[in-house]
Figure 1 (cartoon, rainbow, N blue to C red):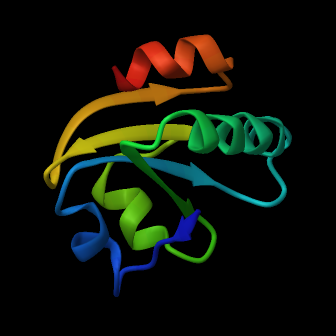
Figure 2: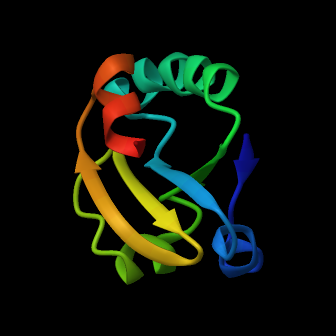
Length: 98
C-alpha cells in the first residue's frame, strides 16, 4: 500500500483505478478496515490501494471533504468517481470498486 501526501497524491492517482483510504491511527474502524484493504489488494490486482493519514495530511482531507473516517474515495484516471464513509466488509468493498 502506498502512503500518500500532498507531494505525491496527484501523481499516484493520475492513472488507472485507485482506491484511497483516508484514516487515522487512533480510529478504531480505520484499524478494522486495514486488514480488509490488504485482502482486497491481494484479490484485485487492477486497483491500486493508497492511504492518507488525515492527521498528517489535513489539506488533502479538506480538499476531498473528508469529515468522518474511514472514508474511501475511488478515482479513475485522476477523477473522483465514488465515495464511501465508514467501515465496510470485503464483499461490499469489491462491489464499490467494480
